[in-house]
Image (spheres, rainbow, N blue to C red):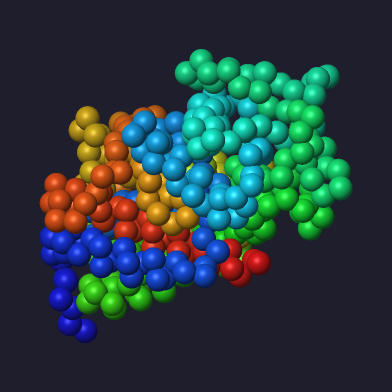
Length: 404
Protein backbone atom coordinates (compact mmCIF):
# COMPACT_ATOMS: atom_id res chain seq x y z
CA UNK A 1 0.00 0.00 0.00
CA UNK A 2 1.20 3.54 -0.77
CA UNK A 3 1.19 6.17 2.00
CA UNK A 4 1.85 9.89 1.95
CA UNK A 5 3.90 9.56 5.14
CA UNK A 6 6.39 6.70 5.06
CA UNK A 7 9.29 7.73 7.28
CA UNK A 8 9.81 8.91 10.83
CA UNK A 9 11.16 12.23 9.52
CA UNK A 10 8.02 12.80 7.43
CA UNK A 11 5.88 12.00 10.48
CA UNK A 12 7.82 14.50 12.63
CA UNK A 13 7.23 17.17 10.00
CA UNK A 14 3.54 16.39 9.47
CA UNK A 15 2.12 16.15 12.99
CA UNK A 16 3.01 19.68 14.25
CA UNK A 17 1.73 21.19 11.00
CA UNK A 18 -1.59 19.34 11.18
CA UNK A 19 -1.89 19.56 14.99
CA UNK A 20 -5.43 20.97 15.14
CA UNK A 21 -6.86 18.70 12.44
CA UNK A 22 -5.29 15.62 14.00
CA UNK A 23 -6.62 16.38 17.49
CA UNK A 24 -10.05 17.22 16.11
CA UNK A 25 -10.14 13.75 14.51
CA UNK A 26 -8.96 12.07 17.73
CA UNK A 27 -11.66 13.98 19.64
CA UNK A 28 -14.20 12.35 17.32
CA UNK A 29 -12.70 8.92 18.10
CA UNK A 30 -13.00 9.59 21.86
CA UNK A 31 -16.65 10.66 21.65
CA UNK A 32 -19.06 8.32 23.52
CA UNK A 33 -16.16 6.03 24.57
CA UNK A 34 -15.64 5.45 28.33
CA UNK A 35 -11.98 6.48 28.39
CA UNK A 36 -10.34 6.49 31.84
CA UNK A 37 -10.37 9.68 33.91
CA UNK A 38 -6.58 9.51 34.02
CA UNK A 39 -3.95 7.26 32.48
CA UNK A 40 -0.27 7.08 31.61
CA UNK A 41 1.42 5.64 28.54
CA UNK A 42 5.05 4.50 28.20
CA UNK A 43 6.45 5.28 24.74
CA UNK A 44 9.64 4.12 23.02
CA UNK A 45 11.26 5.99 20.14
CA UNK A 46 13.67 4.16 17.82
CA UNK A 47 15.53 5.33 14.72
CA UNK A 48 12.52 4.39 12.58
CA UNK A 49 9.36 4.59 14.70
CA UNK A 50 7.47 5.61 17.83
CA UNK A 51 5.46 3.01 19.76
CA UNK A 52 3.54 2.72 23.04
CA UNK A 53 4.82 -0.19 25.14
CA UNK A 54 2.60 0.05 28.22
CA UNK A 55 -0.65 1.68 29.37
CA UNK A 56 -1.69 2.31 32.97
CA UNK A 57 -5.30 3.06 33.89
CA UNK A 58 -4.48 3.67 37.58
CA UNK A 59 -1.21 5.59 37.12
CA UNK A 60 1.36 6.39 39.76
CA UNK A 61 4.17 8.87 39.15
CA UNK A 62 2.37 12.23 39.20
CA UNK A 63 5.28 13.43 41.36
CA UNK A 64 7.45 13.20 38.22
CA UNK A 65 5.24 15.62 36.25
CA UNK A 66 6.46 19.23 36.06
CA UNK A 67 4.70 21.98 38.04
CA UNK A 68 3.40 23.79 34.94
CA UNK A 69 1.74 20.61 33.70
CA UNK A 70 0.27 19.88 37.16
CA UNK A 71 -1.60 23.19 36.97
CA UNK A 72 -3.05 22.00 33.64
CA UNK A 73 -3.93 18.69 35.33
CA UNK A 74 -5.89 20.55 38.02
CA UNK A 75 -7.91 22.41 35.37
CA UNK A 76 -8.61 19.21 33.42
CA UNK A 77 -9.61 17.24 36.53
CA UNK A 78 -12.07 19.98 37.50
CA UNK A 79 -13.55 20.07 33.99
CA UNK A 80 -14.05 16.28 33.82
CA UNK A 81 -15.34 15.84 37.39
CA UNK A 82 -17.89 18.64 36.86
CA UNK A 83 -19.22 16.72 33.84
CA UNK A 84 -19.93 13.75 36.13
CA UNK A 85 -21.32 15.76 39.06
CA UNK A 86 -21.08 19.57 39.19
CA UNK A 87 -22.06 19.61 42.88
CA UNK A 88 -19.18 17.44 44.12
CA UNK A 89 -16.98 19.04 46.77
CA UNK A 90 -15.46 16.02 48.59
CA UNK A 91 -13.33 13.48 46.73
CA UNK A 92 -11.82 10.27 48.07
CA UNK A 93 -8.70 8.57 46.71
CA UNK A 94 -8.27 4.82 47.21
CA UNK A 95 -4.50 4.13 47.04
CA UNK A 96 -2.35 1.07 46.67
CA UNK A 97 -1.56 -0.63 49.97
CA UNK A 98 2.25 -0.49 49.68
CA UNK A 99 2.62 2.46 52.07
CA UNK A 100 6.33 1.70 52.60
CA UNK A 101 7.09 2.80 49.04
CA UNK A 102 8.05 6.40 49.82
CA UNK A 103 8.14 7.43 46.15
CA UNK A 104 4.58 6.19 45.74
CA UNK A 105 3.69 8.41 48.72
CA UNK A 106 5.26 11.35 46.83
CA UNK A 107 2.89 10.51 43.98
CA UNK A 108 -0.14 10.27 46.30
CA UNK A 109 0.67 13.63 47.87
CA UNK A 110 1.02 15.22 44.42
CA UNK A 111 -2.25 13.72 43.16
CA UNK A 112 -4.08 14.90 46.29
CA UNK A 113 -2.51 18.36 46.04
CA UNK A 114 -3.45 18.65 42.35
CA UNK A 115 -7.10 17.80 43.09
CA UNK A 116 -7.08 20.32 45.95
CA UNK A 117 -5.81 22.97 43.52
CA UNK A 118 -8.88 22.10 41.43
CA UNK A 119 -10.99 23.19 44.43
CA UNK A 120 -11.88 19.84 46.06
CA UNK A 121 -11.58 18.55 49.61
CA UNK A 122 -9.58 15.35 49.27
CA UNK A 123 -9.37 12.37 51.63
CA UNK A 124 -7.09 9.37 51.06
CA UNK A 125 -8.73 6.22 52.43
CA UNK A 126 -8.76 2.45 52.13
CA UNK A 127 -10.73 -0.54 53.38
CA UNK A 128 -7.54 -2.63 53.55
CA UNK A 129 -7.20 -3.50 57.25
CA UNK A 130 -3.53 -4.46 56.78
CA UNK A 131 -2.59 -0.79 56.34
CA UNK A 132 -3.63 0.07 59.92
CA UNK A 133 -2.47 -0.87 63.39
CA UNK A 134 -4.81 0.14 66.24
CA UNK A 135 -5.94 3.51 64.92
CA UNK A 136 -8.45 4.43 62.20
CA UNK A 137 -5.73 6.32 60.35
CA UNK A 138 -2.04 6.10 59.56
CA UNK A 139 0.20 9.17 59.32
CA UNK A 140 3.00 8.87 56.77
CA UNK A 141 5.91 10.89 55.41
CA UNK A 142 6.86 10.64 51.75
CA UNK A 143 10.34 10.45 50.20
CA UNK A 144 10.35 14.24 49.73
CA UNK A 145 9.17 14.84 53.31
CA UNK A 146 5.48 15.52 52.60
CA UNK A 147 3.03 14.55 55.34
CA UNK A 148 -0.09 12.65 54.41
CA UNK A 149 -2.71 10.57 56.18
CA UNK A 150 -4.56 7.46 55.03
CA UNK A 151 -7.91 6.93 56.75
CA UNK A 152 -9.68 3.66 57.38
CA UNK A 153 -13.02 3.47 55.56
CA UNK A 154 -16.17 1.43 55.98
CA UNK A 155 -18.99 0.92 53.51
CA UNK A 156 -22.41 2.04 54.72
CA UNK A 157 -25.57 2.30 52.61
CA UNK A 158 -23.55 2.13 49.39
CA UNK A 159 -21.10 4.88 50.38
CA UNK A 160 -17.58 4.93 51.76
CA UNK A 161 -17.36 6.60 55.16
CA UNK A 162 -13.88 7.87 56.07
CA UNK A 163 -12.69 10.57 58.46
CA UNK A 164 -16.36 11.08 59.48
CA UNK A 165 -17.27 12.03 55.92
CA UNK A 166 -19.28 10.34 53.22
CA UNK A 167 -17.22 9.96 50.05
CA UNK A 168 -19.63 10.72 47.21
CA UNK A 169 -16.99 10.65 44.49
CA UNK A 170 -14.02 8.26 44.46
CA UNK A 171 -10.86 8.16 42.36
CA UNK A 172 -9.35 4.69 42.30
CA UNK A 173 -5.54 4.58 42.36
CA UNK A 174 -5.32 0.87 43.16
CA UNK A 175 -4.55 -1.32 40.16
CA UNK A 176 -6.65 -4.23 41.46
CA UNK A 177 -4.00 -6.85 40.69
CA UNK A 178 -5.19 -8.19 44.03
CA UNK A 179 -8.82 -7.00 44.20
CA UNK A 180 -9.92 -5.08 47.26
CA UNK A 181 -12.54 -6.82 49.37
CA UNK A 182 -15.41 -4.61 48.21
CA UNK A 183 -18.71 -5.52 46.57
CA UNK A 184 -18.47 -2.77 43.96
CA UNK A 185 -22.00 -3.44 42.72
CA UNK A 186 -23.36 -2.07 46.01
CA UNK A 187 -21.38 1.19 45.85
CA UNK A 188 -23.62 4.10 44.84
CA UNK A 189 -20.90 6.75 44.57
CA UNK A 190 -19.08 7.08 41.23
CA UNK A 191 -15.77 5.18 41.35
CA UNK A 192 -13.44 6.07 38.49
CA UNK A 193 -11.69 4.54 36.71
CA UNK A 194 -13.90 1.48 37.09
CA UNK A 195 -12.49 -1.22 39.41
CA UNK A 196 -13.64 -3.80 36.85
CA UNK A 197 -10.63 -3.06 34.59
CA UNK A 198 -8.00 -3.98 37.23
CA UNK A 199 -5.08 -6.30 36.52
CA UNK A 200 -6.94 -9.23 38.10
CA UNK A 201 -8.59 -9.51 34.67
CA UNK A 202 -7.06 -6.91 32.32
CA UNK A 203 -4.72 -8.21 29.60
CA UNK A 204 -1.95 -6.36 27.76
CA UNK A 205 -2.84 -8.51 24.75
CA UNK A 206 -6.32 -6.95 24.63
CA UNK A 207 -4.88 -3.47 24.97
CA UNK A 208 -2.41 -3.79 22.10
CA UNK A 209 -4.99 -5.51 19.91
CA UNK A 210 -7.26 -2.50 20.37
CA UNK A 211 -4.33 -0.11 19.98
CA UNK A 212 -3.53 -1.66 16.61
CA UNK A 213 -7.15 -1.14 15.54
CA UNK A 214 -7.16 2.49 16.71
CA UNK A 215 -3.73 3.31 15.23
CA UNK A 216 -4.66 1.75 11.88
CA UNK A 217 -7.85 3.83 11.74
CA UNK A 218 -5.87 6.99 12.56
CA UNK A 219 -3.18 6.18 10.00
CA UNK A 220 -5.73 5.45 7.30
CA UNK A 221 -7.30 8.88 7.87
CA UNK A 222 -3.98 10.70 7.40
CA UNK A 223 -2.26 8.26 4.99
CA UNK A 224 0.48 7.32 7.46
CA UNK A 225 2.35 4.01 7.34
CA UNK A 226 0.97 2.37 10.53
CA UNK A 227 4.34 0.73 11.26
CA UNK A 228 5.59 4.20 12.27
CA UNK A 229 3.27 4.26 15.31
CA UNK A 230 3.28 0.74 16.74
CA UNK A 231 5.36 -2.26 17.69
CA UNK A 232 4.62 -5.62 16.09
CA UNK A 233 3.38 -8.29 18.49
CA UNK A 234 2.05 -11.81 18.89
CA UNK A 235 0.25 -13.55 21.74
CA UNK A 236 0.69 -16.98 23.32
CA UNK A 237 -1.74 -18.62 25.76
CA UNK A 238 -1.44 -21.53 28.20
CA UNK A 239 2.16 -20.87 29.19
CA UNK A 240 3.49 -22.15 32.52
CA UNK A 241 7.03 -20.96 33.25
CA UNK A 242 7.26 -23.14 36.36
CA UNK A 243 6.48 -26.45 34.61
CA UNK A 244 7.83 -25.27 31.21
CA UNK A 245 4.49 -26.12 29.57
CA UNK A 246 3.92 -24.00 26.47
CA UNK A 247 7.51 -22.75 26.22
CA UNK A 248 8.06 -24.51 22.88
CA UNK A 249 5.09 -22.65 21.34
CA UNK A 250 6.30 -19.41 22.94
CA UNK A 251 9.78 -19.91 21.48
CA UNK A 252 8.29 -20.54 18.03
CA UNK A 253 6.31 -17.28 18.19
CA UNK A 254 9.42 -15.37 19.28
CA UNK A 255 11.40 -16.74 16.33
CA UNK A 256 8.49 -16.00 13.99
CA UNK A 257 8.32 -12.35 15.13
CA UNK A 258 12.09 -11.92 14.86
CA UNK A 259 11.94 -12.85 11.16
CA UNK A 260 9.72 -9.76 10.65
CA UNK A 261 12.19 -7.41 12.35
CA UNK A 262 15.51 -5.79 11.37
CA UNK A 263 18.70 -7.75 12.04
CA UNK A 264 19.91 -7.89 15.64
CA UNK A 265 16.47 -6.92 16.98
CA UNK A 266 15.34 -8.01 20.42
CA UNK A 267 11.89 -9.16 21.49
CA UNK A 268 10.14 -8.28 24.75
CA UNK A 269 8.37 -11.24 26.33
CA UNK A 270 5.76 -9.80 28.70
CA UNK A 271 3.30 -11.39 31.06
CA UNK A 272 -0.06 -10.20 29.77
CA UNK A 273 -1.15 -9.17 33.29
CA UNK A 274 2.22 -7.86 34.44
CA UNK A 275 2.56 -4.45 36.04
CA UNK A 276 5.28 -2.42 37.80
CA UNK A 277 7.78 -3.64 35.18
CA UNK A 278 7.38 -7.22 36.42
CA UNK A 279 7.12 -10.32 34.26
CA UNK A 280 9.33 -9.04 31.44
CA UNK A 281 12.24 -10.72 29.66
CA UNK A 282 14.19 -9.42 26.67
CA UNK A 283 15.50 -12.09 24.27
CA UNK A 284 17.00 -12.40 20.80
CA UNK A 285 15.78 -15.94 20.09
CA UNK A 286 13.22 -18.50 21.17
CA UNK A 287 16.08 -20.69 22.36
CA UNK A 288 16.79 -18.21 25.16
CA UNK A 289 13.30 -18.87 26.55
CA UNK A 290 13.73 -22.65 26.28
CA UNK A 291 17.06 -22.42 28.14
CA UNK A 292 15.94 -19.87 30.74
CA UNK A 293 17.17 -20.76 34.23
CA UNK A 294 14.83 -21.42 37.15
CA UNK A 295 15.43 -18.01 38.78
CA UNK A 296 14.38 -16.12 35.64
CA UNK A 297 11.46 -18.49 35.01
CA UNK A 298 10.23 -17.76 38.54
CA UNK A 299 10.29 -14.02 37.74
CA UNK A 300 8.18 -14.67 34.67
CA UNK A 301 5.82 -17.05 36.48
CA UNK A 302 4.40 -14.95 39.34
CA UNK A 303 3.78 -11.19 39.44
CA UNK A 304 2.55 -8.54 41.85
CA UNK A 305 0.24 -9.95 44.54
CA UNK A 306 1.04 -13.49 43.36
CA UNK A 307 -0.78 -13.29 40.02
CA UNK A 308 0.08 -16.44 38.04
CA UNK A 309 1.08 -15.50 34.51
CA UNK A 310 -0.29 -17.81 31.79
CA UNK A 311 -0.81 -15.46 28.83
CA UNK A 312 2.19 -13.87 27.19
CA UNK A 313 2.65 -10.90 24.88
CA UNK A 314 5.57 -11.22 22.47
CA UNK A 315 6.38 -7.66 21.40
CA UNK A 316 8.91 -6.09 19.07
CA UNK A 317 11.77 -4.61 21.07
CA UNK A 318 11.81 -0.95 20.09
CA UNK A 319 15.43 0.08 20.61
CA UNK A 320 15.39 3.53 22.17
CA UNK A 321 17.39 6.38 20.63
CA UNK A 322 16.43 8.74 23.46
CA UNK A 323 19.24 9.57 25.87
CA UNK A 324 19.30 11.42 29.20
CA UNK A 325 22.76 12.14 30.61
CA UNK A 326 23.94 9.72 27.89
CA UNK A 327 21.84 6.89 29.36
CA UNK A 328 19.03 5.09 27.49
CA UNK A 329 15.62 6.62 28.19
CA UNK A 330 11.94 6.45 27.28
CA UNK A 331 9.00 8.79 27.67
CA UNK A 332 5.84 8.50 29.78
CA UNK A 333 2.84 10.68 28.93
CA UNK A 334 0.02 11.46 31.40
CA UNK A 335 -3.52 12.01 30.18
CA UNK A 336 -6.83 13.14 31.64
CA UNK A 337 -9.89 12.01 29.71
CA UNK A 338 -7.58 11.07 26.81
CA UNK A 339 -6.05 14.56 26.63
CA UNK A 340 -2.30 14.74 27.21
CA UNK A 341 -1.38 16.89 30.21
CA UNK A 342 2.27 16.19 30.99
CA UNK A 343 5.01 13.64 31.20
CA UNK A 344 8.50 12.67 32.19
CA UNK A 345 11.53 10.82 30.89
CA UNK A 346 12.61 7.53 32.48
CA UNK A 347 16.32 6.76 32.11
CA UNK A 348 18.30 3.80 33.38
CA UNK A 349 22.12 3.88 33.51
CA UNK A 350 22.19 0.16 34.38
CA UNK A 351 20.39 -0.92 31.20
CA UNK A 352 21.04 -0.99 27.45
CA UNK A 353 19.05 0.67 24.66
CA UNK A 354 17.20 -2.62 24.03
CA UNK A 355 16.40 -3.37 27.69
CA UNK A 356 13.39 -2.93 29.95
CA UNK A 357 14.11 0.47 31.54
CA UNK A 358 11.35 0.18 34.17
CA UNK A 359 13.72 -1.64 36.49
CA UNK A 360 16.25 -1.14 39.29
CA UNK A 361 18.45 1.89 38.63
CA UNK A 362 15.85 4.03 36.83
CA UNK A 363 15.85 7.81 37.28
CA UNK A 364 13.35 10.44 36.15
CA UNK A 365 13.60 13.76 34.33
CA UNK A 366 10.59 16.07 34.29
CA UNK A 367 9.67 17.97 31.16
CA UNK A 368 6.68 20.09 30.25
CA UNK A 369 4.45 19.43 27.24
CA UNK A 370 1.58 21.80 28.06
CA UNK A 371 2.32 24.34 25.36
CA UNK A 372 2.35 22.31 22.15
CA UNK A 373 1.11 24.53 19.34
CA UNK A 374 0.51 24.10 15.64
CA UNK A 375 3.59 24.70 13.43
CA UNK A 376 5.86 24.80 16.48
CA UNK A 377 8.61 22.59 15.03
CA UNK A 378 10.75 22.32 18.14
CA UNK A 379 7.80 20.60 19.81
CA UNK A 380 7.57 17.85 17.16
CA UNK A 381 8.61 15.03 19.51
CA UNK A 382 6.24 16.11 22.29
CA UNK A 383 3.42 16.40 19.76
CA UNK A 384 3.96 12.83 18.55
CA UNK A 385 4.21 11.50 22.11
CA UNK A 386 0.95 13.28 22.90
CA UNK A 387 -0.84 11.77 19.89
CA UNK A 388 0.37 8.24 20.71
CA UNK A 389 -0.73 8.70 24.32
CA UNK A 390 -4.18 9.75 23.12
CA UNK A 391 -4.50 6.77 20.75
CA UNK A 392 -3.38 4.35 23.47
CA UNK A 393 -5.96 5.80 25.88
CA UNK A 394 -8.69 5.34 23.26
CA UNK A 395 -7.64 1.67 23.16
CA UNK A 396 -8.03 1.60 26.96
CA UNK A 397 -11.51 3.06 26.46
CA UNK A 398 -12.43 0.04 24.32
CA UNK A 399 -11.14 -2.24 27.08
CA UNK A 400 -13.30 -0.44 29.64
CA UNK A 401 -16.33 -0.59 27.33
CA UNK A 402 -15.90 -4.37 27.14
CA UNK A 403 -15.88 -4.89 30.92
CA UNK A 404 -18.81 -2.52 31.43
